[in-house]
Amino acid sequence: MITLGIDIGSTTSKCVLMKDGQEIIAASLRVGGLGTEGPAEALAELWEMSGLTADDVDRTIVTGYGRNKYEGADGEVSELTCHALGGRWVFPELRTLIDIGGQDAKIISLSESGRMSNFVMNDKCAAGTGRFLDVMANILRMDIDELDECASKSVKPASISSTCTVFAESEVISQLANGVARPDLVAGICESVASRVSALARRAGVVPKVCMSGGVAKNGAVRRALAKSLETDIDFDPMAQYFGAIGAALYAYRQLSK
Amino acid sequence: MIQDTIRKFHEAAASPRAQMEKYMAEGKKIVLTAPVYTPEEIIHSMGFVPMGAWGADMELNRAKEYFPAFLCSIVQSILELGIRGAYKGASAIVIPSLCDTLKTLGENWKYAVDDIKFIPMTYPQNRKPDYGIAFTKAGYERVIRDLEELGGKFDPEALKESNKVYNAHNAVMRRVDEALAVHPEITAAERSDIFRSAFFMTKEEHTALCEEFLAELGEAGADAKLGIVVSGILTDAPQLNEIFDDMGMHIVADDVAAQSRQYRTDVPEMDDPLQALAVKFANMDNCSVLYNVKKPRVQWIVDTAKARGAKGVVVVMTKFCDPEEFDYVMIKKACEAADLPLALVEVDRQMVHFEQVRTNLETFRDMLTM
Image 1 (spheres, chains in turn brown, blue):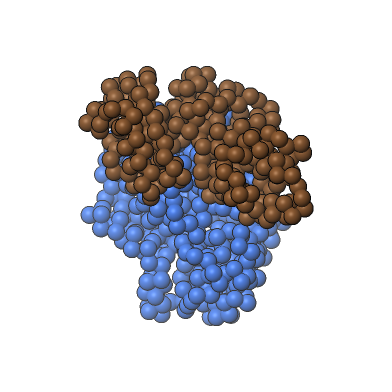
Image 2 (image 1 turned 60 degrees about the vertical axis):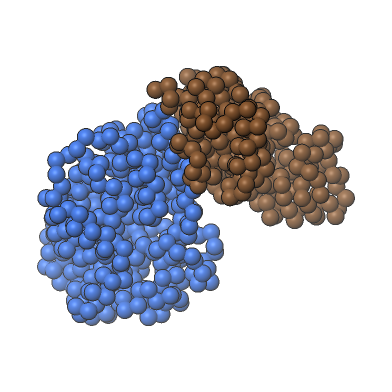
């Protein structure tokens, strides 16, 4: 059975095609999420990569913030449920998943058997999310993907507010004016995200094995700062940004297998 | 037909201003009652119509002249409605002192809304000892004096009768709550209307309508829905109830201040009806704004959820409600200890988009069913 998972987030769209809930046939990602051409472009790329068409798919599940508006799926499922399924598929021992997306952060606890046992979501606030990093990268005139390497050169990370993106923005500008080294600023920015998210994680309870998902998972500086703050290892898989779409494809397979 | 009765609840719940104008057209005087508990029995006995003033879902603007932006949006929206003239024609508003924000509402009201008299109801922190009961009674006497200035007449015999009217309403609301626990076909939105309409109808009318509703309810049906207990101050936002219904959730019990918490305790029968009313307040419990160092409310939620067969508890937190936030930690721990799944959703009166709540409750449903 071929199942398709589509994850329409706030800033990116991800698609994953799976065979029998066991194997990833193809995965695509396009910048542009809810309300953009992103989902259609990601899907077109997926067909091109796999050589398959929509007719070959037995069931499609859509997840993410854009799930309610997407009409081409057989069903929609919350992104927390999908990230939990996807994360556990990649890391069979997974107990705590930290998902930092473009506009929010979520912590999901899994039981030993893999059932979702608890979750915590942040309120609508850019602090501690990918949006925070976007804003800061923009001030520093850097590409978001450059933050990790820049932060790795830091000697003394700057102190940046984790409470409010707007306040943090003015803090960064002040620190730049005071001549603080760019790597120290970037490291401070990443630590700020980690600080905010680790507080959220502690509310849910952190049980190893811990992994990250979502776009921010790619940022090693945030991962390292989170691991330090939570005093635990945090696993990373290159497919971390696809966990939601993988989970959606797995959910579709579960439904077909019933 | 039950749908006609449900429609009547909805019309009253959705149109408080129309209800108010109807009573004023009948020559009755309106006294507004702010959250959480006010001595409605006294107001009723002195010939006024008590009407709940729990604010409305709206953009706050004028209220911010008096409140910092982050304060409880329920309280802010009450002042906003007062300033905008939504309560025009009301004779007074009784505002209790049961939380810090309510205390500031009273003081701000005096300056912001000069055509509707502010009547304070100052409750004691320690309401159960004799001195606490005496303090409550003194507060009620102050309310009586203020209502007399508006033309009301206090008569202990009339209060005895009003106490009976309110006890009868409490009893019918408890029966409604029990009946709804086994009638999943009544939606969360309809349940909300039944409770909300009680604030905008005379208790005699509401009791009669509830009796009609109970008589029209058929046999208890099989419950294929997901039973939950809902806890919080206020859960009347239509979008919130729509999500409960979309998720196939059945509210089998509530611990909501604007719902069942209002009706748990009756006025005892005593020779002095005002003393009896003060004893009623002393006997009330299981509420975030009613001080009790032992916090029996926490176990009450767990026990009720178990007794009603709920699969989980949903705490609907009004943002910046300190009393509810203090209790939440204890509720969470008690639910965890009882192996009772719990979800927390945050709401306020200014909320326009409920996607975050939907995602939260959808995930909670998955957690309970997968």
